[in-house]
Image 1 (cartoon, rainbow, N blue to C red):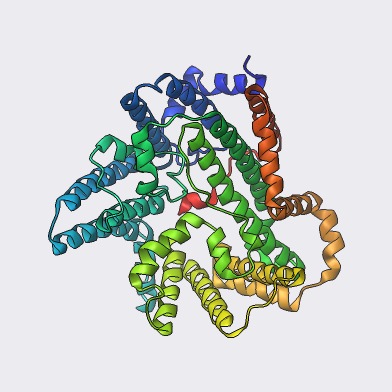
Image 2 (spheres, one colour):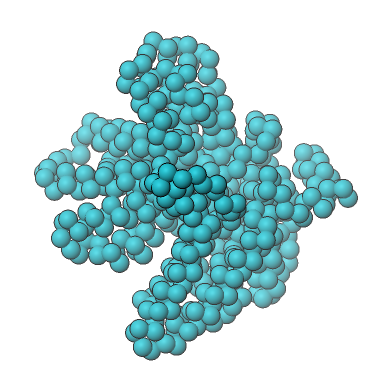
Length: 500
């Protein structure tokens, strides 16, 4: 029996006058994991996918078509760019596998990099470059009307890693065009990661996997976690507090500004890790396994550990395909630090066409270099509990304060926030803040409590959920969705990383 709220959603979406809207591109309403439309479509997808489980080609075609529809709902005609990258990668990969001469192999990899980086420069950075040049020349400039295709930073990185791994001999070229298209267009990680590598997914595609009972249980559990992180924590504190502070920091005391910084740090984590949880969970329901993208990053005791826990698929990609090719650690200390700084600055720029991201990336480079220099000069000491707490506290605050540059629209906003925190802190407003923003405080404290809770608690909760009969697991998911529908805002809030 279909729950009443789900039945209402189905009737609303698929009524005759709504069907065209469902199929058509709408820039203001992309197809997101946290929408009722996706819920209904994904249930239907699972049913068809199950019926086609013995027919590998039909199953792959079905998922590819759904993935293209999913991408079309976010980027309209730019889905043809995604298909073009699939064709380009496939052809260049075959040629690279057959090429014997070193110069030809390098040229094929370089061509792939030029194609992908060229797209990134055009769609993401050309306006930033032209605006900067115009400012230097003191001339007016009207930005070009360029629409950024959703997820372009993610699928271009996957494309580059595929070609580089062939060049390095880590994988063989994919000779099945359908399989490669399935890999590059697979919808769960398409828009906002994780950055799934061909060497991890193509063998799974070839094996024609079927979701096992434990995979289904883990997938449903991750979807629940992702929905709670995104809607109950990230969206609520973002819309009702964080956005207000960052829009007008001088209207708030330094204490409230600091709470805004802590709030955004939690919002960004819950928004992005929530997407990753749902993407990994949805993939599990379809039989595919991806590695974790976040591992409680705010428990880190130093910046190096933080980047081993935060956006793991990106940080490992930058290490393997940028930092190591630049020379990595196999060079002088000066060169090594320069490599690290270059990697983090480019990693910051990857997030968007703004010098604020460059500054944020440069700060991460400073933190990493500073930690390595400190580690080389200070003898290791026993990890007493108070040292662990102090290290976590210092690292968290460094990372949180750096996120001001990530969120703020300009240096004026950052300057205003820093001024309020340093010169107009007013801890005395804390009682009024708690009273006026009680639910915000509860959401922030609850979010951080979930994050800092021992990992074994989460594993135990997941095991308890997995032990339930499938019908009870579905009921728990339905109850969570019902609760989320009651507490979410009227407007669907897009995931932050969709803009990257």
